[in-house]
Length: 356
Ligand SMILES: Cc1cc2nc3c(=O)[nH]c(=O)nc-3n(C[C@H](O)[C@H](O)[C@H](O)COP(=O)(O)O)c2cc1C
Image 1 (cartoon, rainbow, N blue to C red):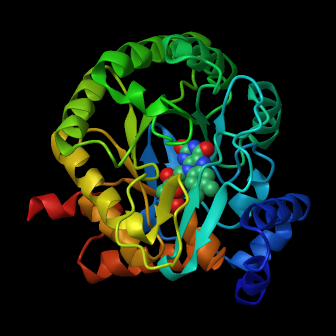
Image 2 (cartoon, rainbow, N blue to C red; image 1 turned 90 degrees about the horizontal axis):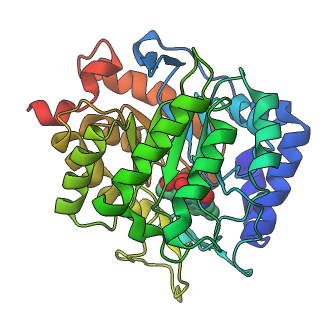
C-alpha cells in the first residue's frame, strides 16, 4: 500500500505530507495497522528494561509525533515503543517554513523544525489518553526564548508534568535547531541539570511508576567528550542514553543542490551513529542501556546497532522512505539474524561485537 502512496506523498511538500498522513492515521488508526501488516511475536526479541516490557526492540524516534496526536496509529504500525515530543513547556511555532527537506538519492532528510509543538499542557492531556497502550517515552526540550542559564527551569517544569505520565523521559540537549541547546552537552552544564531533573522525577513520579531518565546525545561531539560524558552521566544516575540525534555534518551526500542548514538524518548518519553506540557501550561497560537511533532503515541496520551495544533501536527517516511495513520486516529480520548467528535471545546479541 505504501509503495503506491509514497510517490504521491513525495510529490507534496514534505511537511504538508507529514501533517496530512499523521492527521489521517490519527483519525483512522486501523488504516495504519492495515498498511503495516501484523507484526509477529518472537520470544527471542522480548525484553524487560527499566521494568517496562518491550515485545521487540524497534521503536519510533522523537519528532515524528511531537504532539502525541497519533500514538494509537503508531502502535498499530507495530512499534514496541513510541517517543513523543520534543515537548517544550510553552507552545512554540518553530522555525519559518520551509524547514524539512527530502534527499531521496541519499535516503535522508534535513530538518530545521525548531521544536514546533503544542506545549506541555496540551501534549500531557493526549499522553494521558494513550497511557497503557504501550511504552510511551516523552522527549523534553527547552523553549527557544529561554536562555541557557534558565534551561533547568524549563526541564523541571516539564518533569513535573510528565513524570507521572511517561514510561520514560528523555532530556534532549542535542537538537541542532534550537540556538545554543547543544552547548548544554558539557559536563559542567549537563550534570547539574541531570541531577536536578532526576530529583524532580523522583518527587513527581507515582510511587510504583518512576520513569527512567535518558539523555539523547549528538553524533557531532568528539569521541573523547562522548566517552567522558557517558561515564559522568552514569555516575550522575542517568538510566540510559539515546545515540544519536541528527548531525550538522554533511557526510558524502549525492542529492544535487542540497545546501539547507539543519540536522541530517537517515542513511548518511548510520555509520557515525553506530560508532557512537559502540563507544558509549565501551565507555560504560555495557551497564547503561542504549537506544540506537540514526539511519536504521532495515533489519541489518538494526542488528548492526544491537551488536554495537544498543538494547533498543528507533527509526524516523527509514519510516518515511520505507513505510509502515518496515517494522514488521525489521522484527522478523532481527529474529532471523539472531537464529543465524546462534543467539537464543537478543540479550546475547547486545554488544556482541565487543566480545570478539
Ligand atoms: C523531521 C525530524 C524532526 C525531528 N525532531 C526531533 C525532535 O523533536 N526531538 C528529537 O530528539 N529528535 C528529533 N529528530 C531526530 C530523530 O528522533 C532521530 O534521532 C534522527 O532523525 C536519527 O534517526 P533516523 O536516521 O532514523 O531519522 C527529528 C528528526 C527528523 C527527521
